[in-house]
Image 1 (tube, rainbow, N blue to C red):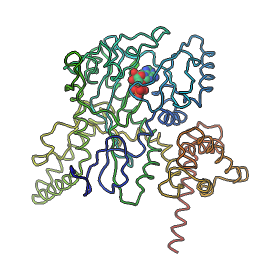
Image 2: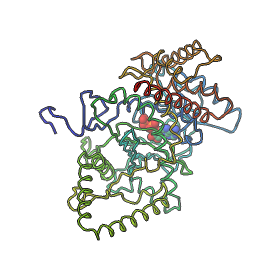
Image 3: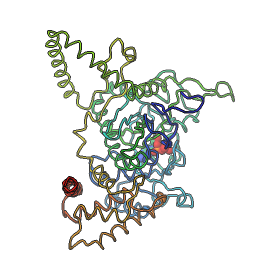
Length: 539
Ligand code: ADP
């Protein structure tokens, strides 16, 4: 703590809202550059859509979404087409302003023509999304889940999920949307900040009753109804990993711009709040990701008529204290040192006693083997088992702490998801050609160099066509009103151009195969070029 201003560097910086401090040269910051921008409704929808284009089945956990105002006619056309194809389809849509939170400005519609295309939608872009009409109900009420996820590192990717989360309940019994009930926010929106104002909101001291409960209490209930909660957890874990995989390419562009490689800078970690809705069939659907989830453990209550005060909230305390405590344990800068010391001591001990060395080896081997077998059996599912750091010992400050509530899911299950990380590799190409440090956009020369170095132009694809491709795509992306701070091609525009090139070069294959082939082609030529430069350098 630095009560009189900061003179010396800290080992952990805890920023309130977002990464903003460019004067940090060491230690760890609790926010990633660009995360707030990445999880805005429009940016998240775009990032997930790119992945849906590549892997439609793997990314079907996010409702079909359109970006307003620019995709309004696409929205109208697609809905008309789907209705023509299936006249029985009676959809509902939810319109959510970009950058909004706490249900602010959200409304439901039955028909695209009901969108309020007034001045506000022009000045305040939004996402319109298919409304999930059949959510899972508990006590006849709709609820959603807030899960806490720790992104501990971007490169290499390290993700932890908290074993418990919150379930936030609506305060009016749920009915499928009709023109009559579309406006009833207490029936359709699960936001705590809205429902707290309903007369039906129930504050409870128990974590398994009331309008805010622990997720584990819901799982208990579901389990007693015979639901396969292990499968549910496994689906949630893969939803979280896939969502983060969709976000990482752009996060890496922001990261290298704010914290250039090779210069002194901090590392980052971040606690994210994932909002998930369970469908009736227990399929989890992603609603949104919060970069700055509330960590309050009190709530406001009317103590006597007209008198409000803050009172402790046991359910928030139960879930959130563990998340913060264990985040600090996982990023603890002293931890690595203690771990190293511990192993060094252990090594010396065993060296002193040769007989024990053999015995220790046997014990160690047996323990590793059994862990491997049990892990394989548990697959993605077991969040019940507590992870406790292995080197806990009497002298470790962690010895008296409860087991970790944060469970590592990546790289633990990396193998099952690595095939999805295609856009990450496209982003690596993009970053390589960015040139000037600190930028996030590629200039026309950088794009030409990319084409030339990767040997992508030929007689049927001249450099003039390369320039046209660059100008066309860049202009369109820059006219979408995303941000005009820098001119040039943003990563999403580069990804679009890359997909175009892949489709042109490898016709009639599924998109993800075309993109994989083109990535391999580029990486091969760049590796050859690097080798040539190395040899020339030596020469
Ligand atoms: P905000 O950031 O304003 O809270 P959300 O995207 O979380 O916006 O939406 C607010 C609430 O609306 C959610 O908590 C959920 O109850 C409901 N909701 C959002 N999207 C959908 C959807 N596609 N289907 C059903 N309910 C939804």
